[in-house]
Length: 229
Image 1 (tube, rainbow, N blue to C red):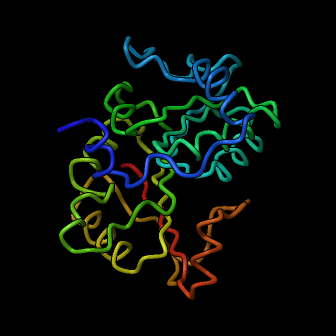
Image 2 (cartoon, one colour):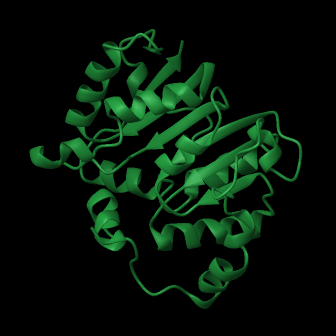
């Protein structure tokens, strides 16, 4: 299957509207400096991927327009963030955020997050963010949802004991299926202590454009945290 066709099956659109000159320029100049060297071995300690010392490494899978990733990296300069996003326009928006905020604690992969997960050494991540992933609402497409048995196996390998998987969705069925799937596993535990914990995002919380659209459409965001055990 041609590469472009395979990418559409996984992600939908790869590119949207025409990029602004600044965005296009940063894709040519900044992205190559931030891209992960997946053609070689990953450092035994992924903290070495960042130019300044960091105390922890977080992975965001599908960062969209980069609002959350840019905010989180700015608020936590002692944390190294790896962001994965195949949508070109989203990558371009994040690069503008990185330049404007002067962030040196982000590395970017503009393709499938699973390539990064497979590349990372075991027990290397302190937190994984999966915020509003494509819900693939049609029944025949649900196997494409990121939270699946195989992907959870891969995440369990690279997450440290005590690391958190933070998942947000506005799709009831996706939340329900994910809870059922993770409840069957012995390597993750849902951290909720109260009945309405799922309503509360992780503070501080910048929100995202997709989340705003979901609320306006009458859908309720669900925030689930699972700890690696």
